Structures are given as C-alpha cells and as structure tokens.
Image (tube, rainbow, N blue to C red):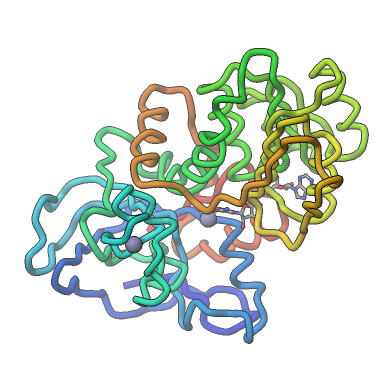
Length: 344
Ligand code: NAD
Ligand code: ZN
Ligand code: ZN
C-alpha cells in the first residue's frame, strides 16, 4: 500500500510503497477514508535527532477516519463496513485516567510503549491503518469522513480546552483565540456554538483573519499590542476571561498575558517555545494557566454531535496521498485555509 512517511530527520516526508498491515489479536484494520495534517506534525519533523522520540520511518497522520476493513482475533463490538473516526490519544485503557475516558492523560502509555497513530504508531496517511483497540473508534454515521476527519484533533483539542472554561464564558465575557489556523478556526466556531461570549480572533495573516470572521468571530484583529486595547474596549476594561493560545510562542504568550482579565484562564494549546512567569505578582489575580493536551474520548462524541447539529464545520483543502507532501509544504508556509485533508 501507499503511505506518507517521515523517514529522515530534517527531510520532507515521502510517499512510499509499504506492506499492507495485518491486524493482530484485538486490533482493527481500517481502509482509510481521510487523514488530516496538523501543525504538530510539522513540529515533530522540526525536532533535532536528540529530541525526536517517534521512531523512523514514521507513517504520519494523527487525524484519521476509515471504514472497518478487517478484525483481528477476538475483536467484538465493531462490524466490517462501518465508517468511523479514530480517537487518537491512545492510552492503556485501565489506569485511573483511562477509566474516565481521559486516555490523553494515561499514566502508563509511556511505560507500555503505547503511542498515538502518526505520533509513534503508524498513522492514517496511508491506504490502511491499524487501530490498537476497537474502543478508539467512534462511529461517523452520516458524517462525511473527508469533511469531518479533522474534528478528531482540530475539533477535539479546542473543544477540550474551551470546555474547562465554560463556567466563566458567561454573557458579556470576552474570549480570545490567538491563531485562526486549523485548530483556531474550529475553536472559534465551538466558542460561538457553546457559549455566549464575545469571540475575538487574532492572527498575523489577513486571510486567516478573514476566515475567522467568516466562521463566526465577532471581531478579528492583527495579533499586536493594538489588539490589547481592542479587547479591553470590548470587555468594558475587564479584559479577556479566556485566552486560547493556538500558537504558544513568546510573543503570543506575552500578548495574551496583557489582555487577560482578573480570574481569567490563559490556555496554552500551541506547542511553541514560549513560557510565562507565574509568581504572585506576575499574573492577574486569580488567573490560571492551563496546558491541555488533545481531549477525552467522551468529548470526541460531543464534538461529532456539534457537527451533526450543523453548528461547526472544518474548512478543508483536500489532497491526494501522492500530493500529501504538498499539504505539508502549504502548512509550513502558512498558506492553508483551515485544514489540509489527505484522501488516499
Ligand atoms: P496552523 O498552522 O493551522 O495554525 C496556526 C495559526 O497561527 C495560523 O493561522 C498562523 O497564521 C497563526 N499564527 C502564527 N503566528 C502567530 C502570531 N504570532 N500571532 C497570532 N497568530 C499567529 O496550526 P494548527 O494545526 O492549528 O496547530 C496550532 C498549534 O497547536 C500548533 O502549535 C500545534 O502543534 C498545536 N497543537 C496542540 C495540540 C494540543 O493537544 N495541545 C493539539 C493539536 C495541535
Ligand atoms: Zn494534532
Ligand atoms: Zn491508562
């Protein structure tokens, strides 16, 4: 089968021919219908050899959807032919976190060598993929896999980040999304769908600001100090009760700090190299800083239900598997609109 693999540190990923995998006991093989490209893939491929822990060659793709194609020995509860999305942050299934569906925070995944598809295990950018356990499969039903595959990360991650701040996102509050890319443009829609907050989007790119407004941001501003004044003005001087930083570099963290309200949540979603001082006098009173990773299994069901309700959707640019390296070139150049989705 064809697969997109990262094979050499520092080099671009390549389309290669590899053996079609067979599902082992307890595993499920999917015929992949769609796979999304995330900025985290670009991050992984930017790591120097000493920091790279994902194994080579690595079949990319941690956003996956497919049709159940073959069941390994002992698999029950799923049927061949079912259209599914893949819950990506695989855990052990047994620890305290996993018992609550919080497999993204599994306490034992590292020790047991369990890694998400595309981030250690072979991913979805291939004609077929192996899913370790049927519990990672969420039925898509009538949802189009190509249009919705990215909800498994670009939807789930912002949803999880926003959900913990919901009690604060009351009428009259202001929420700020920094970075209106793959995650950000879905995050904006989630904020609109599940809160009554005024939603402000910030980006450095005018086209992303236009997309942010199209998908529902009440306001969109360039990501600079002028935005701090705008957010203060829009919030009656209080500042933003939630700042969702989908970039995570020092300039966006500093900007977010300047506009955060008393009691606000500063949420670091972007995997950048920024950091924040957290001493008693450094932050607005009672504010908190969170660094959420991906989301819970149960939340993926909720995100897909938001899509079914027609209140969120992913802006996609579709690529063939042969053209998948181009998707990453565009992601790297910042010229994608929404999310790149590869269809094998
Ligand atoms: P993306 O490339 O699609 O979007 C990034 C957006 O940020 C772009 O619109 C870009 O123009 C904008 N941007 C860049 N610099 C900016 C700045 N200084 N100010 C404002 N906007 C700026 O990326 P993505 O796939 O949406 O991923 C976003 C980030 O989230 C990445 O760092 C990724 O690694 C991370 N991520 C984290 C998790 C998690 O679990 N925490 C999950 C998925 C992705
Ligand atoms: Zn991702
Ligand atoms: Zn676990």
